[in-house]
Picture (cartoon, each protein chain N blue to C red):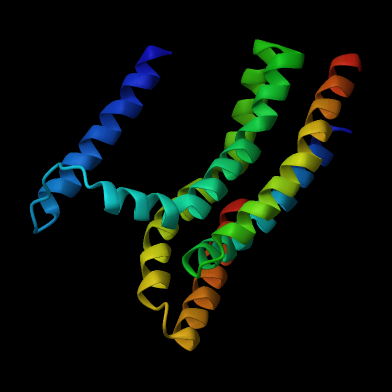
Amino acid sequence: MWSLVAGQIAAGVLSSVVLWKGYPDRVRLRFHRKEAKETFRDSRAYVSQAASSFLIENGHFVAVSAILGAAPMALYSMSYRLAQLPNLALSMPVADVALPAYVQLREDHERRLGVLVTMTRHSAIDGWTLRAS
Amino acid sequence: MDIEGILRLLCAWGVIAVPAGTVGWYANASGGSKFISQVNMARLLLLTPLVFLAATAFACA
């Protein structure tokens, strides 16, 4: 189990290093109380939805492992991951692109809606195709 | 429910989950995080007891 934890930490550290190296401006670690306050206020709603999404996505694992035990939990977890595979393969990379694109087009409502329709169409068709195969 | 029925349910849910996800990102990037958070809280209140009930029903079966 600890190898999984170590893998997650290594992936996080590696992606941070790559992003830090790839970004043209050097970022220095400093604490700004005013900016921290503003960031906390602005991100409160997003953090709240991310936390509630996390609970929704993982609450059933708690129920299954607590009531049915470890062996059924392993089977359930694997079945769930297999059903989720098309979503995980498509949604995560698309989400990484979609959020900055939407934010960039924040003022341009028409184009933003266009991006939404295109992304929904492609991810849905790709997901359905993967599921059917 | 037999395994085929369960797999059909999972597939139907997966098909809905993809477009729901893209709409979620759109809402998040458009200042709709608070609304999504409220919807999620309502879903949590509804789903949490249901998930525990379903697990208990499988344990008893």
